[in-house]
Length: 300
Image (tube, rainbow, N blue to C red; front, top):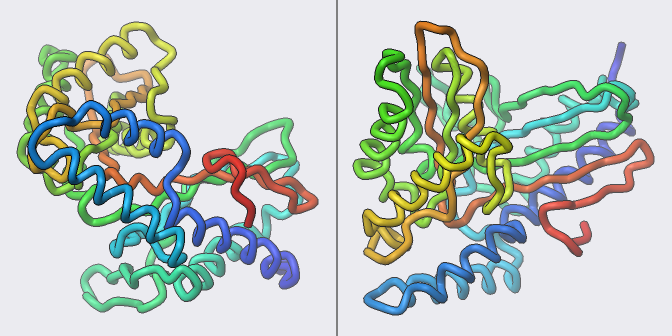
């Protein structure tokens, strides 16, 4: 079935505007948490770093520019209603939206083809933008998350399969080993996403999807929620601080997502988001009305 050019044009215009706004404005929950953390830091450079972050965001808004020069690789997480009428046009619309936002925002050209080692110049490449699809029954809406996966926040990322006897202590150890080695590269304070599953690729995917959850939210499983709290408290005690220059707090929060595992394996994945956590969510209805639910009050 051929794509409808008018639909692709209209949908890509809306999504590119959504991307442009997200590139220069942090989501409400992240802004709230950074302000809370700023009040805690009263010693050394930490408070000054938060002052710089605050000024950075004000300039991004007034100058209509991205909040960080590394605007990342574009990633979409699409929860598509089974009755959403534009399913056939959606992938083409997302690709076109990236092209438009690259010029409009502007977004830095970050898509480098593996093996051939050249920059495509428009943020479009092999499997980029990355699109994660989920079909939602009994819905005619599109719930779309956009995430800008920058180089710094991607550096600590990892996944591994543990021997089951290593248990949850082994997962915590892997997180702390990685964050104390590479966490400074992710421009802290970070949001830490952890996936736990039976294989490395599922755990890695869940760790990235954990970053889509609001800062301050908790896993519905009480034991998982307790693990989130304990790891967050531990990471905050290591003293990375904002910008990695020392401070009382090193992470905005810890989000864990899980999938049932094989009896013989225990896999974990780790993803981090930098302080400028450019995660945005929009809900689009068949009539193209929308709810920009991560940035309340914003209009496109």
